[in-house]
Image (cartoon, rainbow, N blue to C red; front, side, top):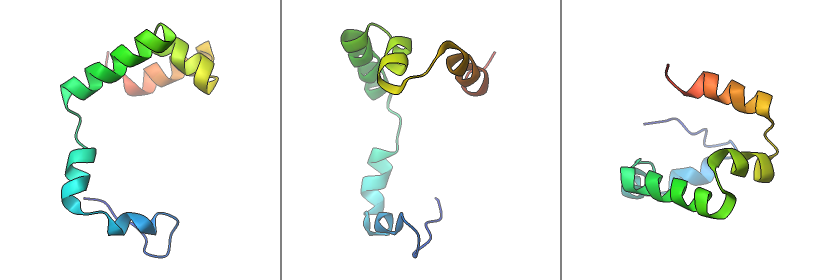
Length: 71
């Protein structure tokens, strides 16, 4: 799955039940759709959310698109 250094800052993650991890780390389409709907409802768009809440400017957003989206 992944490695957590028992002496590192994320050592507390070793206490999480693997069954809980499986649920938390999955990407169910309905959860993703609900997240996008909430962003649209509260901020107008994902881009507006990133700009207002996280201070992401147009250049940074373009860089994110370049790295994360497939052509």
